[in-house]
Length: 331
Ligand code: NAX
Image 1 (cartoon, protein in one colour):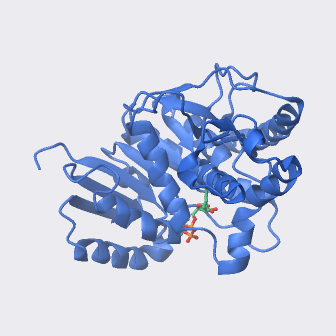
Image 2 (cartoon, rainbow, N blue to C red):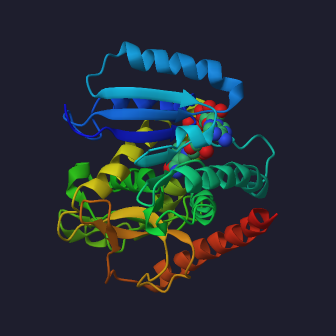
């Protein structure tokens, strides 16, 4: 393997998503068997010892594609020379904590990591934020890393898209492969907007295949908006393997040309979007990629009163989150 090593930073390396994600990246699944990869793994000092154990396990897999593992607790050391940053680590929401408390706690994490990226990463480094609230954490990181290209900042709604595709397929009694153009708009939160107006099943509008429109407007929304909570209730822990899987899907979506007529959900900077969404938000849109990390908005999706109302609710939530963290960045 004489190719230049692809350097991928993963934060929250001792956490549960990373325990699936790191091994799938190291195995060559993300970049292919010919692409050597180095993992740069960041954690907080309290769990550095556990992270050492994860690194030992990575070495013990003897993956031919794993060229190097760098791990530690200093963001500037870990982010040096990277091509891609997967910002997974964040403080969890504890019992009784309000969303605003979580925003404030995690704003600090992403202000520091944004500044570290700004100092040591290159303009072309791609950044995908997973740690919640991921849209606003992504916005914070982007604002604190003005040396990087703002179009290279992404937050994850791919898990919600995948969940939506499964639910539509299950309801229609078809395979997930038969569901096309599934899309999530807005915030990765309980205001997210799964779009059944533009989605298709076997190239037919979903509303023509699933005649139960009450289910689409109610249960379908509720299942997706509450899926994370349902998994915590059932498993006692939040989604991890499916989140890692969605991270891989999201990175592949940027690295592989989007098939003609298709799109994928990605939370990106809203500037210049064709749907009238306020500028300067990290908002989930229909995107297509030319396969080299560059992406464009997909134009011309249908809108109706139901969708527009839902979009305005999720947009408002993101505006409020942004205004709240703005003050914290200035402090
Ligand atoms: P875990 O609590 O298992 O792991 C998080 C890890 O991050 C911990 O090991 C912690 O020490 C580390 N960490 C905390 N602050 C850090 C910092 N400043 N630098 C580096 N590491 C730090 O959580 P896990 O289940 O892995 O989830 C990680 C994040 O993903 C959470 O914020 C979670 O809410 C979010 N999720 C986002 C999803 C999405 O679709 N966007 C879905 C899955 C997941 O819920």
